[in-house]
Image (cartoon, rainbow, N blue to C red; front, side, top):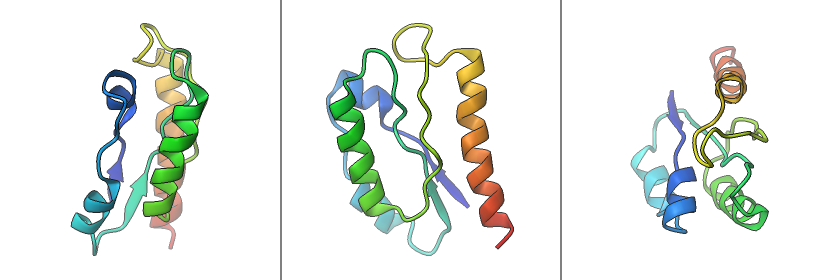
Length: 98
């Protein structure tokens, strides 16, 4: 199982995510769980919605998105890292049960 969790820093600093289509093709044959960009202060909601729409278009299985607090505008609080991981773990466990 491959967990794809990227994009938040790029979305904030570079205003881009890159080619999820190319990434998905390179992972063909693997079970993939994509992690949506989480909503957080300092990241416009429109960017989150657009990024997650792109992720949903390419990856069939996705972890649940969380609404997160940050310590510096980018990095999650300790509690929210736990919630983020729990959302990923929940999806991963559902894959393992299949």
